[in-house]
Image (cartoon, rainbow, N blue to C red; front, side, top):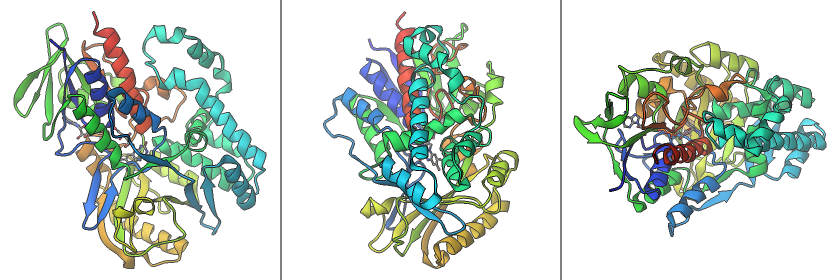
Length: 490
Ligand SMILES: Cc1cc2nc3c(=O)[nH]c(=O)nc-3n(C[C@H](O)[C@H](O)[C@H](O)COP(=O)(O)OP(=O)(O)OC[C@H]3O[C@@H](n4cnc5c(N)ncnc54)[C@H](O)[C@@H]3O)c2cc1C
């Protein structure tokens, strides 16, 4: 008889692990508290407009191809590489377009920001070096198994550690590299890709831009939600059962602290192993209230949250692309607010994603679906106090930078805030990427992909190793699967 695996949560990490475990011969059941799959990677319809609710940028799509191939599925996951990644707008009127072609990008930075082309090219090479040297050590394997430190690739990462910018911050390195503060701001922004602070995060994190410029930025043919749909299809084709509207309330353990099962909707289910794709705070505080808690890991500083306006806009803006950034005037002040205050600053950077630029069906003809996101502190307090202020500030900034009257064009509106993110996905205070990466030990202060105290309990998703964001969650599933096969064979 096959072993039985229960997975809590149908976020991207949970779905990816369900596919891998089913292919490894487990009978897999996924329990999802919502009536829909995908967690943060879900979608929203407002009359004729469709929005991706969370992620808008796809990097490393080959991690999804790997799952398609594993299942031998005949419907490939279709996606396109972007020619232009992001349109940048600065408060003084400077504009630039980040091409995915490194030479063109360097030329644009040279023309608009007066940096030397070689400086940009060499900077991207350095970030590639950071990534290639550390991916094996920090991203692709468990950091909690001694045997993993004895491979050549890992030893290389350790030997090169003095050259990996661990003792510098992203901001300091970027300021030392570039002559124009606008270029520094552009590259500092990559800290937000995992909800961190460029004035604190180690320079090693500059490697995030390598994912976009060297490996490429992509969009699925039907928008980001296609990732969730594709993974659900792969899971079903692999024999996984997905139960919706099933809020897991407790894990059941034997007297020797071995997983026995779980309780959902008042019913007991027995399992040989259980994997959690939910935030570690929810796992330990709600599902295991009477058991050991990894207090040090739970206390780590959290990543930022987001405030999103989903706007159906009855006009087309030719000057905007798929990804657009309207920078703030004082980036340092913005991050000070994000990590020390419970509300965002008066002049936040605004990110506008318009998937209808590529996926024409996402908005009616002549209209656009605007996903307008502001990074905000993770927060368990009601955001009502600053919500109105934020909307006013965002509208006035868009109006002045794009020379428009945007409010007159909004015909549909919905919002997402830290409280809704927590309610919909269980992420602590709505933090998007689990712990922040604001210190050089951050990689070692994420929860392992298994529990060292509870036998048969495994962990995936954005709050555990190697971290948040689609590629890392997919890696967490790969690592957890390897651990399960290795540890459960006895
Ligand atoms: C606004 C926003 C923008 C983002 N932008 C990007 C981006 O551009 N690129 C990128 O790569 N990443 C981005 N991310 C991050 C990315 O979405 C996440 O890192 C990733 O989707 C998290 O997946 P996960 O596996 O951790 O599961 P989650 O998405 O956190 O899902 C967890 C699931 O578990 C379920 N659950 C919780 N508790 C229980 C329970 N007790 N019983 C049953 N089910 C339960 C929840 O309902 C949820 O479905 C963004 C996120 C947000 C919110």
